[in-house]
Amino acid sequence: MEFEAVIGLEVHAQLLTETKIFCGCSTKFGNKPNSNVCPVCLGHPGVLPVLNKKVVEYAAMMGLATNCTINEKNVFARKNYFYPDLPKGYQTSQFELPICEHGYIEIETNEVKKKIGITRIHMEEDAGKSIHDQGYDTLVDVNRCGVPLIEIVSEPDISSGEEAYQYLTNLKQIITYLGICDGNMEEGSLRCDANISIRPKGETKLGTRTEVKNMNSFRNVQKAIDYEIDRQISLVEDGGKVVQQTLLWNADQNKATAMRGKEEAHDYRYFPCPDLMPVFVSAEWKEEIKKQIPELPKSRKTRFIEELKLPEYDAEVLTQQKEIADYFEEVYLECKDAKLSSNWVMGDVLKIINERKISAKDFPISANNLGKLINLIKSNKISSQIAKDVFPIMLQDDKDPNIIVEEKNLLQITDTSAIEAVIDDVLNSNPKQVEEFKAGKEKVIGFLVGQVMQRTKGKANPKMVNELLRKKLS
Ligand code: ADP
Ligand code: MG
Ligand code: ZN
Image 1 (cartoon, helix red, strand yellow):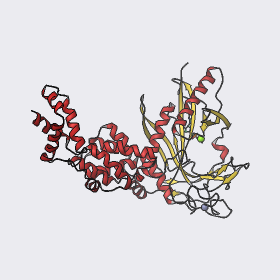
Image 2: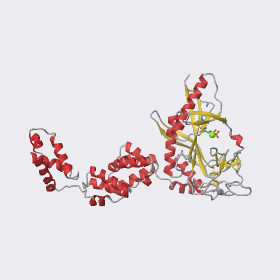
Image 3: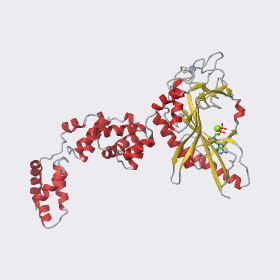
């Protein structure tokens, strides 16, 4: 019997607000444990939460960017459970009326191009953190309590680890373009749980699923899914049955181990939070939120191809991260040459960014100055070769390349008589090669050009050197 896999992903994304979802405490990461707290996020009795407006806007932005409908009426619900890092005893979340529903994200793998449905996106607060490996039994840091999250729940439309990887990559691209989450999975600002089941090919009913947690990279999500699909198929083929449970991925051992039986929604005794009024997203407010959405990666890529006439490959690489695309466009604005800008950004710039593991925002050369360097090449003031020497100098102090070229005396020699003088010199000191050329050994011209370039420290215009040499020799 042939099986197919059915996968749905739940993604938690930490929102980049200054303050928490229901109080004014800072969301800053890395502060002293238990210092970003107040009676509200500690769940003291008698306090009242006040909703952070930015959280609603960010959640709606993500919904609009993923083709969801935005619900006008939003209700917060309490999800009740006990855990040491949840002093309130419940998590304020959304249950029946989430802010966004019925969207999709498009993905493309080598095999398929398809839409992965988004069931819902809802707002909620994060819990604190239990720390188990510091020489105590367990330490609790509640700084993260009340940090705003959105949870993005997909339809079970994903069929492989590879598709899940693509979905997450596109989701991260969208969310970071929006600037509402930093997308860092290692640091936990993006977290993904994978729900996995199998069924005989052709069957329409869903099989029993397991949920795998604890993956800290997209590649690990992919691996964990493929591992779990194989495990379920072997189990069923051997006459066993999949039991609904939660598994933890162990990246060191490349396997998943059972953590606990999986709880159902009714275990949480959800009920509408009596402390929070429903929130209404009016049509006008929705319009305002729409205006905050920047051009998204897909349409930016299309524009780079159609308007800037860039090859698809270039457009894809340049739009992967918003900061890179922004940087590229600024370079282009200065020099008005899309392909040259693209070559420099995809080559020399990305090389440094990757080597130094920095964001394009922290790249030491301003886009303006890189554009000016390209202008120097375009106007024949320097050769591409010399430009490669100027670039590292610019890396040091972001100086205007016009000044560097001036100071270091690197301007290309385009003066005919100056070049001719050097050529005469070279011909006089290489009589043997001149004879060989005259006897028909065409290749020798390369040697002679090289000599001229060497004597001018690479500054002579190579095309002129070639032409003038041939004229003299004929
Ligand atoms: P919960 O995890 O709270 O029980 P849901 O029932 O809403 O939440 O489902 C969560 C995720 O699991 C969704 O992404 C959904 O698409 C996926 N899912 C539900 N049933 C299955 C199944 N049988 N196989 C694979 N994925 C499933
Ligand atoms: Mg779940
Ligand atoms: Zn607080």
